[in-house]
Structures are given as C-alpha cells and as structure tokens.
Image (tube, rainbow, N blue to C red; front, side, top):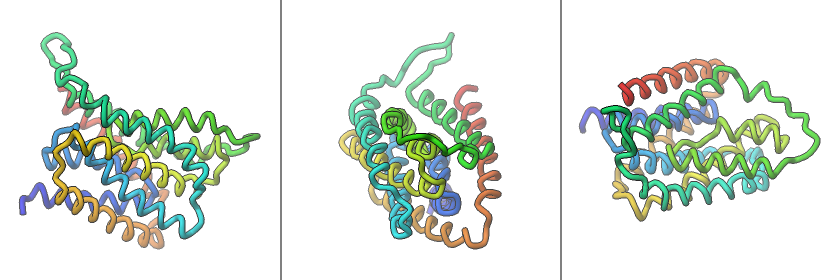
Length: 264
C-alpha cells in the first residue's frame, strides 16, 4: 500500500476519534488530508468530505438519539434551508465556476486556490471558536424561540458546506443555544443531526458531476466511523475540554499553513 494512502486512512481514523471525543471539529481535517496527503483536487475533495462528514455525523447523531439528546424539530428547522442551499451549491454553482477566476498582477487565482483559501479561513474561525470556548460561554436566557434566525443561519451554513465541505458546527451550535434555547449537550447532539442531513444531501448534488471512487470513499468513511466509537469510549478517560484546546491550536496552525501554501 502507498505510504500516503496509509497515512490518509490513519488520518480518517484520527478524524473519527476527534469527533467522538469532542463532538465536532475533526471533520475540518478531511479536506487537507484528501488534498495534501492523497493529492485529490479540491473540488472532488470537498465533495468527498461531505460524504465522510455526513456518515460520521450521522453515526454520532444516532448514538445521541439513543440518549434522547437530539431535538429533531429544531434540527429539521435548521437543516431544511441548509440542505437546499448545499445541494444547489454542489449540483449547479460549483460546476459552473471557471477554473481561472482572475489575476493579481501575474498571479493567477484559480478555482482550486480560492476554495482552499476560503477553507483555510473557515479553519481559522473554527480554531478561534475552540480556543475561546465560545460554546461554553453563551448566555442561554432568551425570551422565545427565534426560528427565523435559525433559518437564516441554516442558509449561511449551507453556503459554507457547499463551498468547502465542512460541517459548520462552529456556527450551528451557538445558534442552537442562543435562538433555540438548547442546553449545550443537546445543541452538540442536534448539530450532528443537522450536519449529517446537510452533508449527505449536499453530496447527492455531486454524484452527477464528480467521478467518485466509491471503494476508496466507503473505506475512508468506515474508518472514520470506527474512530467515532473509539473516541466516544475514550471520553471516559480523557477530559474533552483540554483536548479541544490542543486541537484548536492544531487547526489554527493548519489554517495558517494552508494560507501560506496556497498564496506563496
């Protein structure tokens, strides 16, 4: 087996463990692993990421449903606009974006570069969210459910997921706490349901436009799912808050690395 492919599968396992341990964030590594380790072009990598994130998050959501932590009604309200937008993005918008976008002097900005730069920005925002513990510090005392704001946030999450194949948990969880008055545990669990719906339906938009290596994608996703179960078990021994801080720094450095690699 090629060493890069082996490292990619190890990366998938690591993605699952992180998801199982801290309830999110691990999926942000999927695209860099696919692009830089396995040399898959960014458009295909973001499509693959939707499937990996979708199957992994669905596994986490099902585990939490058994614990009665998932608020299905809230999840559907948030997920509906998001999955419509992400499907339209993957099915119609991404394929029509030209490969060459514009020039800055003699520097050509291509679609692949633009996707990776935007992805790096998403990584930086995600890392800051982890490092500042925004989720834990949100004030939950609001007077009523604000579903119209959840709907608008769903659209924003759909755009991000459609462009870079990330779950958008850093946007979803604060919105669920603030505008749906969910306790943090339920917000994290419900976000997994939302992410799984968005990602898997968004991936359906890619089926008609991408040349998908199903053998690789199914194996990669299965390894990530195994990692989730192990990560969930490890929560009995490892404090998730400490791990989240360390992982936040790692994501921050990765985001900076991608920006430097793509722009210089």
